[in-house]
Length: 62
Image 1 (cartoon, one colour):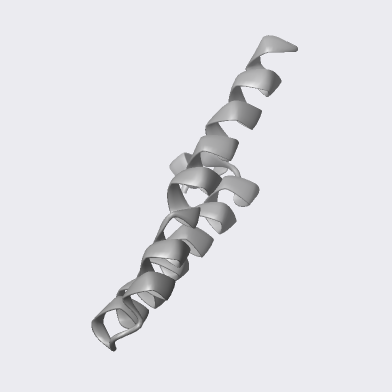
Image 2 (image 1 turned 60 degrees about the vertical axis):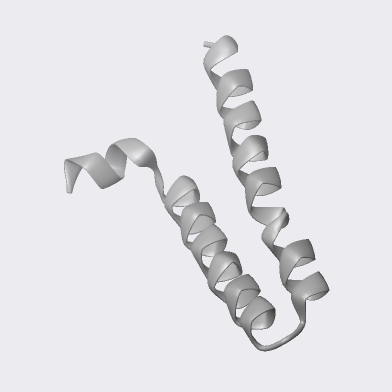
């Protein structure tokens, strides 16, 4: 439980959101909407990159 407190609630929610986006993108890709699945799948690295960027800004201000 201490590990989840260290990660933070916001980060856990963002990671769950990324997992949901991956699952929806896989569903779209496998049901024949390849372009929509690829487009939606590209959001995950963008969100993760934004999380890393915000974490770096937060650590730099301390």
